[in-house]
Image (cartoon, rainbow, N blue to C red; front, top):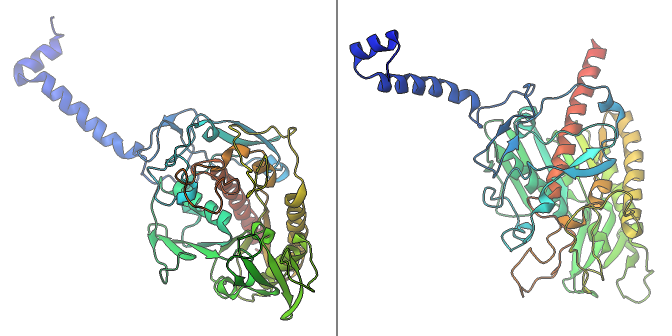
Length: 434
């Protein structure tokens, strides 16, 4: 084939046109790589085309580029906690092979869960949108800040989900004070962001009086008017608290106030009044929120995360109950009821009381209302896929915790949304003071 005059002369002079062309193209490509490398730090206000795809080395398949903060009027008026689950073919954003933070009992893929459709959903609020979690943006916002998760194993489940989502950017280093797995601290060194976990399933002071108890899940002395010092003495330094509880109040407990027994829940002991589950929980939550309001040096934001209902069907947790559904409910297909409804009402009621009191003291409380969204996800639990078959475990069919990856990853979508609104409030307040 005859070359154009320019390329004919160039070939004669250099005798290696193809090599030079390849070299030139290589240099151009190398110059462009830093702009598109997935670990190049995205600024928090990056404008991105959501229709464009990228492939991350820490996730399988394609994932949408992360969205910018969209300044819309409906952010303040739309209730993002009311909506439906819609398809999301781009999820999940990590796997059990790319994230070390997954607890064994929530590692559903490792233990053979055969379906993956439960991973392919996102939350769509009614009347607005909820952007997918942006780990780069989150870490930018958390630069030089700290966050603590306080509560039970579902709270730990949430924190591990967050660590897995952030693994697309960076893994934290362990800076825990000791080897106690119930009290952990991690640091994202690039961002000087500290993440901590405080195990306190009752939130108040508790002592196990019998490791077996009437239902073989222990018998606990719960001091309803005493905040748990294991976390209340440690949190004044934190910028954000994420508080959760409720599930452990279904266990057999003896309730104390002013160091005196006032009753119990299903303790089976003579001459002790049997009180409702919610009686103890409401007292304890009130004590907890009052304790935060009384901390003179705590200037952070407290997120009260509402209950994520369990989904046992066909029996109770220890009587053959299971969760085998493979897709979400629509909002008109189920309703919150029973003890989950009682817990939820208590959480909202006590949150309102604490927020009103906190407002007088400069304390900030926010409701991270995950109840409606998670009520619709009976398909997201480990069930029997949190252990090997025939394993000797207390909760054989786990319909309380959530698979990782799984629907619980959406909680970070909500959290980031609320942090953005918090940032806007802080900016508006600072402008008003000027």
